[in-house]
Amino acid sequence: GAGVSQSPSNKVTEKGKDVELRCDPISGHTALYWYRQRLGQGLEFLIYFQGNSAPDKSGLPSDRFSAERTGESVSTLTIQRTQQEDSAVYLCASSFRVTEQYFGPGTRLTVT
Amino acid sequence: AQTVTQSQPEMSVQEAETVTLSCTYDTSESDYYLFWYKQPPSRQMILVIRQEAYKQQNATENRFSVNFQKAAKSFSLKISDSQLGDAAMYFCAYRSRGANSKLTFGKGITLSVRP
Image 1 (cartoon, each protein chain N blue to C red):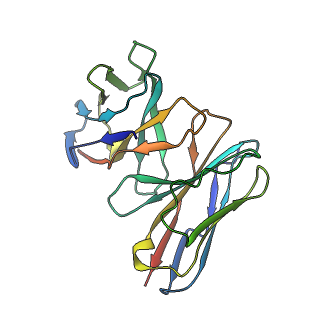
Image 2 (cartoon, each protein chain N blue to C red; image 1 turned 90 degrees about the vertical axis):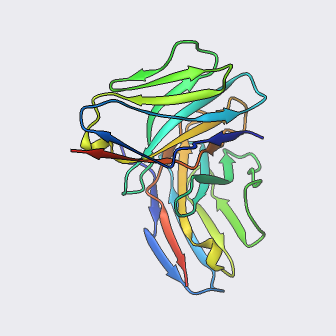
């Protein structure tokens, strides 16, 4: 079946602009995660959604970052007033309850 | 908080040979999962192998196997009969068994395979 999809694949934006990144999880997966991967680094956890529970936002680096998820479907990660240090690949993953996570191809964000 | 350390930034292996990638971690928990993920240039994270901490037997998946040393908090990945397609970044990751199942990743290691 279809895997996790993310859009756009690449995004170039000017410093100070807002950006919105989208994640479509695997159908039926109740859990959804966002991670950030800076160049040459491992993945950093940003936020976690599990069903209708309150999301775990403990990884969000600042109040410029926010994310929403509608039910058990699409999620959007929004970065307001982007800064150059926000440049990274943003990866989304989904899982069914607490089983293994399946990752999307990521969105490469470049802030100029 | 849990931490995952991959101290080797790069490794190289000859095609058909065996290579071992190192990983150590720190946790106060007794029950957890450990993973190795592969990330080729396409950016797609691919699960290579998973180990459950309560299982003493080392996990194996075809040419991939792990050496899990719980007391030493060590989790290395052995790739046998290396193939050109194995060239990628490899990440070691930790996950608690509890409700918040986020993954904690190491910095990764770049593996190159020489033909």
